[in-house]
Length: 173
Image (cartoon, rainbow, N blue to C red; front, side):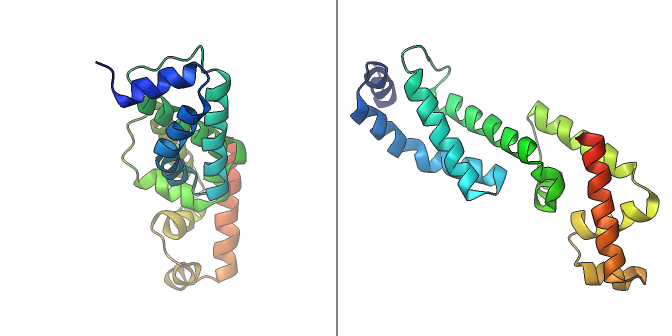
């Protein structure tokens, strides 16, 4: 007995545009939220979902999903989202991604490797730079708070955080 998803997928494979639209409306929002959670960029998440569905439509006759369409699609969104981050170097240029990566309990091998490389690179920063970077990004302290705690200027904090990102970018690149 085939479930509704399998019937929709068969209809899409045969070129049924209504079934394709139904599939899009069934999953589009969920895929968007998944991609947005990773990229933290609404436009990128929309593009990733749209690209997935466009590619799926183009290859509908040859694609078969195991164990399910949703599992395949979530994995595709995940990989496309990571590619977006890599290509736009957001994990280096914006500390939100760095913080999110450090806070995440990751199971994916690619993310584990990225997290390991990032931690190693942070650990290899010059001592003062590392201390300021960790306080400002990983501990989520405001630049003014870091400056007050360390008895330095806010500008010094900005310079050291910027220096840390530059070094991390060079090491992880």
